[in-house]
Image (tube, rainbow, N blue to C red; front, side):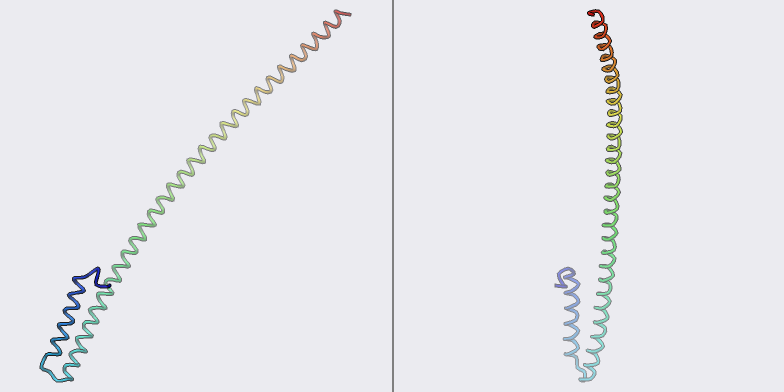
Length: 137
């Protein structure tokens, strides 16, 4: 599975390791020399693998940080857009409330005028009724 992403590099590494082991085993050396050589080559190979894993880990960490930064940036952009939209809606609602209050005040004024007119008309009717009653007596 690890070889899927870096197939060529992984194949090159595995092939090199197999070739090195085959070369060591086929070389005309004593058993101890061969074991020392295998140990030395294994340590060297392990060091290279460790370095590659470390580099890969560093790259992944860097990519993760970049993605995290991008996501945070997008979140902040959307947050700002939402806050602006909320502010616009609040302004519209406040304006609508102000308009309704203004219209309500006008209706109250009109009601007061009509009430005053009705009271005046009632008074005129009352006065007219009194005059008619006096005339009839």
